[in-house]
Length: 363
Length: 247
Image (cartoon, rainbow over the protein chains, first blue to last red):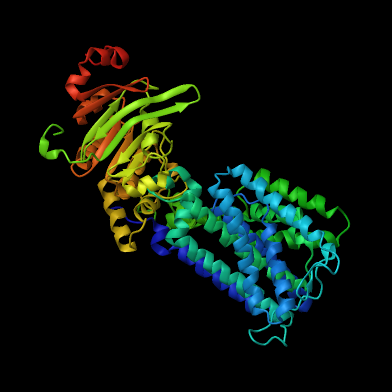
């Protein structure tokens, strides 16, 4: 408290400011998009948002929990299927949405209990989660035929479940939402989940989760049980992925075993890497950017689109391994510090204010 | 102090009986009997590989003893998890600093102070600890960017912030400047007014600054235990460890 705070911090509290700016831009997009885009564009955006939700789940457990889940698609698929099966049976979508969150959470709870309490090392956690997602893929794939049904819902094997009823307002089962309504629901829940995750990370629980990522031994020696914290973080991330799956099922009105597939699990890792590991905005931006590029690349015939995406991934891993958001943020902070530093040249700057700020914002 | 009958409690704070740690064919700690009273200060010395750090790991649950029992007050902690032992009131600064590199100094101390405490209480402990260890000026710096000596202080701060009753310090003066070593010695004496402390250290001048009772480890066993001057002038101790520098 003896040293005056660094100049930039005296003007703004970066963490709070960036949070408010993020929520504000989210709201602008939420209410602006229906006015700017036609229905086709809006539906496309809804698909992006569903994947952004999925990416957020991976970004949370990997970037903050330090748990490398290589089969996050398992939870996306469980959420999507839980919603589809429940809504086909119940009609009203309220409970199915909750189930899309709770079913993956419980599944993650069971899986995570054996992984974390069984002292499985980090590398094997990647292998196990990957294997589980593949098993689920194969399992659901074999459910073709009318004997594989849960109540009214036929699982449909490789063909999946078509004509899934869309979301409706609670208690108003006869009136499914139109594409604009689905957009509001999807983007609204993305903003909500972002806010909830920020709150979790600012809470004591969230700080301990991050501390365990930084040094598990120290966390234990202070008196925290890393197994429990990792398990809870894993369950939260599974619930978010499940909600993403629910949005995904609503976006197309259709779900098939490909949601459990390796491609999904790999894609979400790319989203997070490109956007920036250890941030929440990064995975969202990465998901939107990569999907947009995929569509754009698919629309042209000059180069193979998969080749193009592969090139982008290699470029990122080699040249900007931290991802877009951290790079942009450091640039912004350095610029801000330089500008303010020039204005306050009379007063000496504290030691490396940029570094201190980076630490603050990182939460 | 350790000889005065008034200071001796009915039951020791920490007691190891026949504590043994085997790694394959190697016995790193061999049938060690060790007793520490309330608010006692004990120094552990001995050559490299004598089993001091292994013994610390057994006391904190990072290793589970192959044989023997370890008690903290009335609780058998032989097979307890590290977090369970920490909750009983044992804090340790490890030999290689274990800190949260990606967090700021203040956040490191906050996480340590905050377990099961109110936010106001936590904040008070954090500020008090930062001031006490003169870390306030670098409170917003990332710990990963600090010099080795400063990281040691941050780790000591996290240990103090968790408010343990027994504090284990594994080479607290390693890599510190002469001035820092003196500060560390003063701090340990201050902590010892209210807490029991066990210090593992190689630095002989440092041991002389703080020690009352010294336990010498050699090849996994306790070679000798007693008053600092007696121990350091013992011929066997000189032979195994000190060589001519203690003279």
